Image (cartoon, rainbow, N blue to C red; front, side, top):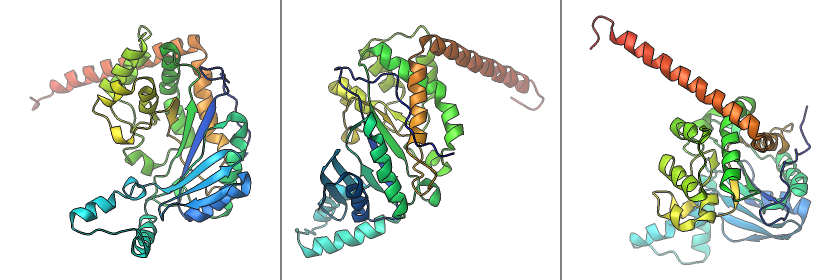
Length: 334
């Protein structure tokens, strides 16, 4: 059965008492940037504005401004021009650059997805974003499963409801406790598991966070994250949020500084983007996030499940140690 209704979150307001907003990013192939822009205009109005062969905008839409880009920073930022200048080749704006970028866009589009970046919207507006998704499906957009080369993802940027360390910790713990079930239910594509973008968190960090005695202040919460996992390539990327809270602290760490866009959101980038499946809707991966927040709002369940998870991990560790000791006693082993 197709899931079309979006599950509400337990916290409706942000830290300022205003309605929380959600940003959506969809990666896809099989459709041009112009066609993606048309699907947006068809649902929320606005006008397309082409900036280059790699980047265009939909301005003045009813929900705000949308961006359509080829998901390759070296192209959208035109960083390739600097490399050419080092070789003594200076391509000025004009028809030559236009022809070159159009050709580069077509070639890159075979492997690099187009990405539709939606403006932050209120929860009630998510069905309109899903209507855009449906229009892209009708236009022939292809998603994660359509090729072994595609590791396309769907990303939600969910505004946090609180900046208190205990509240942030509760959501992070809930994410760790729900993670394996999400992987199983969503069938996260094998090609995406091979990419660096959504690698699992280190087990020692998970155990550190799930320890019921762990009660960090905001500074320690950020410092521990930067110590255990100083990268944005996680299924729940906390660097944008932590940079919003303490930019200097984050930027002083060995992280991908140039790629971090600070914002007061959970950057949830785990789901597949099954945009070519007519029975798939954004409400399906959204439900998994709603489950995370519902668990985060239940401190007794968080503590019970955390203790169970840590206990199971301890049993596995003790079993492995015992096995290694037995193997060490076999003849011929040193």
